[in-house]
Image (cartoon, rainbow, N blue to C red):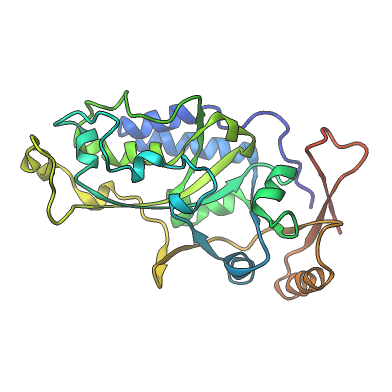
Length: 293
């Protein structure tokens, strides 16, 4: 089987509309839009190093979900972990409510294209790692990944919450998810989908002058506003993904011993191996071609 990744812009250019549906509490419309977009893409890919959590993920399917401060974008989810109030929170609004909550955010990234040299360099150990291929319909069959999977929206500025400033507190979850899936436009080449685990907890001793906690807290059902995909183990966060469709290796960069090990894993798991290679007919200098073995 050979998957042909899209060469056009992301199939969910309507990502902003997706989050508007969530913000307006229209989860059904958002889910349908996501389902249609993923049906067009058919496959998502995860670039991984062949060490530590990356190797564990390949063998067990136990996928590590990172905190925002562990990701390579220095502005990743900045507002989600910013507690200084420098972005002018509005008292009495959902934006103020953000400062009353302890936010635990974890993310795992998937990409629409396995051929991108920059992705191999950034996320597959420059680039002696591998790329795992997942069918989007199988991702949607898993309740955890179906609920936790969201498109990333790219913009020219950091997400500052100007639009939802006066939103009622019950929309807090949608605001947090939108922040968790917002990246600056230079990262647009990644064409990312993101598995998000977002757990919102009330603080023990909230301190935010001028706002009455009782004014909004009774209307906020914390369990319903939390997006939880995964489980914790020793302080780290994980989610179980389906068995990958293919294990893609970078043809001429993989260590011989690792190559032998991966082919052994392929035989034991029944998951076929493919090669990513530069060919004369590649569409661009930054792309590779994938061929099955």
